[in-house]
Length: 98
Image (cartoon, rainbow, N blue to C red; front, side, top):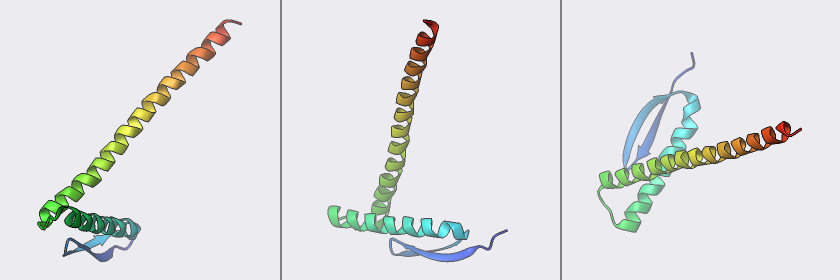
């Protein structure tokens, strides 16, 4: 069993103490940094002062990227499957003609 690591992350002017696996530290710190940067961008661009609104917009932004990536991958998989089926049909036809 690995040792747990205690860290503190600051997000939207609040400190969150966490107990994590050491392997998670880098990802969590990068995520917190990205949230902070995006929150500052929203505050500056849209003159939003309510932290809850800013954090909701950050959550929406990150979630939409994840969802869009899934949609893009699904469409790419469907296209690849169609190409494979066409290739399979072509090979089958060529082998059947001999």
